[in-house]
Length: 243
Picture (tube, one colour):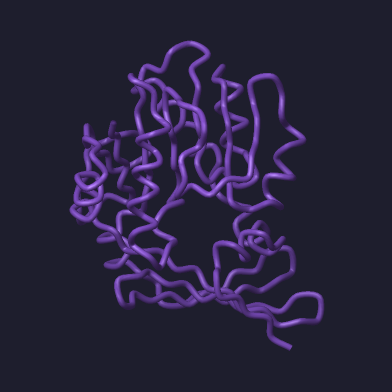
């Protein structure tokens, strides 16, 4: 039996296999990025941060340890239920659809590590930017950290295999109809699984169009987690600060 899914972001993220496949991500680099970001934005002491699409809350927890009042939200009930064990007076987690405004305002809204561009409907992407605008207080900053699509497409590895915890994941990648697509297949617990990740290959120009439609202003663009200059052909990330 092969199990497949249609709405990949609503189901793949809820499986234990997603977290197994990506368990070796470089969180030291991620934490350094958040240090750099918080310092660059000069966020106030005890400032409020909304971590949009927070997953199991690892980055929300780190931001909270830096002294910020953090709310982490995600569409995945399973991830939020897991994250809730770490809640305290200045750290909360909530199930929330990021296309809708959260009923509070913040000093910063972070959408990190390519947690954007999942929707088939372009209107949902625009609604997400508009929602972030509403979630920012008078002095707040929005941050979207996205893959640099131009670099990714140019350097796409068509196929590889990765074994984690005794499970061999076959990963097949392609660029098709404006999306960067990864097909993931593996066998676990006697069953065959197939999942697909689909992310819209937004360029900086595409984001600039969205920002204009949403009525927000792009302030800065960086190309990596050290907040160095963005180069379309060689930068690995597309990190945008707006308000």
